Length: 204
Image 1 (cartoon, rainbow, N blue to C red):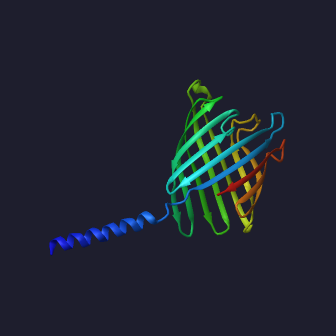
Image 2: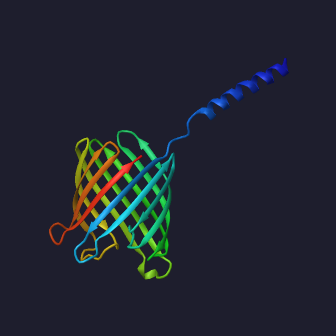
Image 3: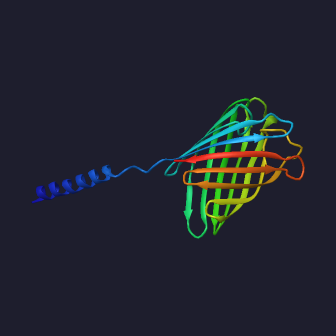
């Protein structure tokens, strides 16, 4: 009788294991975006960002983001809260190679409530070659969705990717989305010498 019990248990456990093996693994989410910067008294340039999320794992690659001719490779952990206020917080760390060789602890944060969305990305870049070149980078924006496919709002950033008389640059933005595609227009320092940023993105 005991032997039959063990056989029955083995069959149940085996069938459950096979059922779990047949379930599809959690899908990857891939986001790719290309940004064109049109900056007065600076060379125009393109910046590329590719993000891959799998469950809690966050991977990200950037080029011409922290600095020109610099690539950064990020790994982080996604914390999600899906309630009346939706939260996505990702602490992460990166290695940088190129015109800057170093590391950077950073974060990404998205808060959503009603038709409002707040997004912020920040990091502290540590330059291995020259500690005096260490700097804080930040991009933060607050937008509203008057329509499901349209968002506009205000944006600020602090960057060393280009020279600017202002340490913190302020501006306006608008984005549109259609199925897996999106596009955006940003203008910084519109009251002085404006800088323009155009973006196109794809999500899979």
